[in-house]
Length: 322
Image (cartoon, rainbow, N blue to C red):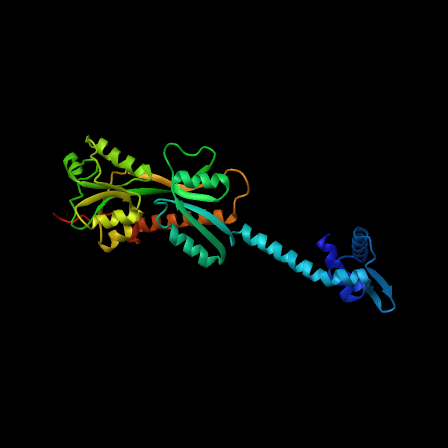
C-alpha cells in the first residue's frame, strides 16, 4: 500500500470533496481521483461514495481512515528513525576495547553520549585475538585496539586512527630515567633496573626488547609481568621499579606527580592504534560517528600540543634528581 495513496484518501475524507482535497494537497483533481481508484483496485473494495452531502467513506473506507493516521505516524517515525541512525544520532554500538586502546576514548564516548542521547554503547574488554574473533562472528561491531605490526587478521579492516607514544615510568623515588632506553642509553642503567612489564599486548614487550637491542644490551629478565595496568602502576609506588607503558595510560599520574616518566626515542617507541571491523555489510552509522569523533579529538590534542595549550599532550619528562 502506497503511503501517498493513504494520504490522498485521508484528505478526501477530511474535506468531503475531491476538488477541495486536490487543492489542499497541491495535485490535480484527475490525479487525485486516479490515486484513489488505484488504491481501491489494490484492495478490491470501494472506499468512497458520492452522496448529496459530498464524498463520504464506505464501510471499508471508514476502516482504512481510522487506521490510516496510525499507519502514517508509524511510517513517519520509521523514516525519522532511519535518518537519525544514518546521521549517527541514534543506534547501539557493540564495541570491543583491547588493552591500552586510545587513552582519550572515554572522553570521546562521553561527549557522544551527551551530544547524541539516542546513542547507546556496549563496551567489552579483552585481547586483540579474542575481540577480533567476536567481530568476525558478529557479536561485536568493531574493536579499538593497538594494531599489530605483524599477524593482523587478514579478513578484517584495520583502520589506523592515532599513533601512540610510549614512556619509561617509575615512582618519584625510583631510579634516574634520563639514560634509559634513549638513543644514547646506558646498558648498565637499563640492565640494573627492576623492570615490571605488561604481558599483553606483546607489542609493549617487543618495544622494550628493541630498546635494549638498539642500545647494544641484552634484555634482563623482568621482575614481574602483569596484564593489569592498575596493578603495575600501584607496584611502581612500592619500590624502585620501572615500566614501559603508553603515555596515555600514565598521563594523569604524570600530571599530578604520582609518577615520573621520560620519553623514548621516537624512532622505535611508537605504535599504531585504530579500529577493526568487518569489510562487508552495512556498518552501524554510530561506528562512523565514533571514528569521526576520535579523529577530531586527536586533531584537537595535536593542535593544542603545538600551541602549548594542552599540558596533557606535551611530552616533557619529569625526572627527579638523584
